[in-house]
Image 1: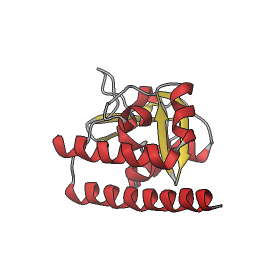
Image 2 (image 1 turned 180 degrees about the vertical axis):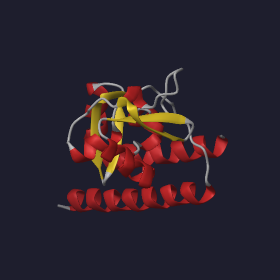
Image 3 (image 1 turned 60 degrees about the vertical axis):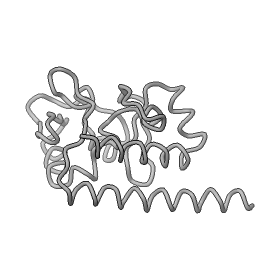
Image 4 (image 1 turned 120 degrees about the horizontal axis):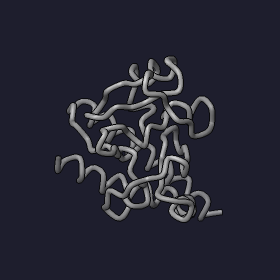
Length: 157
């Protein structure tokens, strides 16, 4: 019982810290690294809004895009593009779309948009299923480590 309460408290603290970091970055207007290829297309062209609205990874289309953080974000529908444009921090994956487990170790590792989870209304991507299994084994702990490493990464840019 005490372990469950401890996990809930850690989860609540993580969500609060996440909110503070997002607001601080938005206020500072900082550019952050984005998981984009040489073509500057974010997260292999997947529609970040679809994870929330469709509950699954969905490829975006070239004609429905929005430029943000120096990358082109693609969407399956114009409505998704408009939702993202109105509030990119709500829909963009954490850590610029890099692997959450890699970031918990301080590394910007490419993520596979097919390996994803929504935790505390935020989208997290991982390198593969194994990394996702590790993330879910201690979600609050890994996210807290990743948030600390991400803050250092963003401040270093």
